[in-house]
Image 1 (cartoon, rainbow, N blue to C red):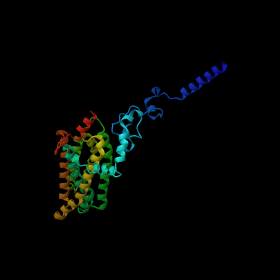
Image 2: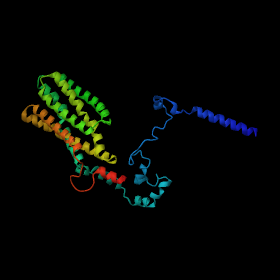
Image 3: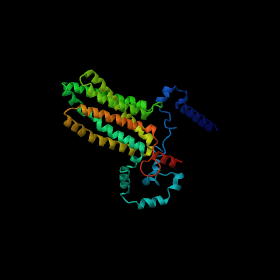
Image 4: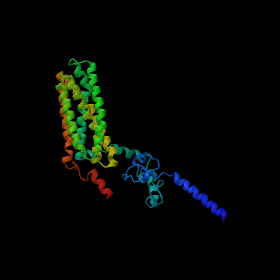
Length: 312
């Protein structure tokens, strides 16, 4: 009896010591709780059903369906799954990958087409200041160091714009599509002013800073707009198509601006045309909030409606 009482008292002391070591976060100030490691940060996080962080995401992969299943999920991972895996050829995953890469069906949606055309126009003409501003200045009696300073200003303000506009795009009061529209319009106006204000170097510095700042909206706002137009599980494909449009624009822009210079023997028309087309690309994005998204070719629901139907 005495030995039993001693063991109980010892166990109570150990439990008391363990309780003393556990940090209760509800009594700590808010700031200390943020740095405390004894909290479950991801306890109440809401994750998209098809996200890789969703606890059942591995069950959606053909390769791991039966092996990754827990006991309650065995009923839907029956032996038919193994039979299906045995019937699949070695190249089936490669074929599925290529089908996903060559899926251009999103271009048939009105809003995604507007955004894609805007991206092609923007990346065709934004390259003019980056490539030809230095030569334009040296042909107007400026030194190479003066031109290099303007390019440095564009790069610095572009970096600041990515941070500032990226933060603003996450705020609930921000209309990303409308803000992106006006940023592109301002970027186009700044491009035109580069040719008009060539004799005034101080004003060129201001215009270059505005160009770099407003052009940063493309990197900050394009992913946000894509998420509003396309379901999350299709975001990778949509962003890849957006990068494809950027590449097409980068291939067309420099030779086109160079051809205009060869015809006119001046960079003024290239800068004016670049600014005008950048403004038009902004107006294409501006049509998105004021039009209804729909299929422009064929029948069937758009991507967002298809996701809602699958969830329902």
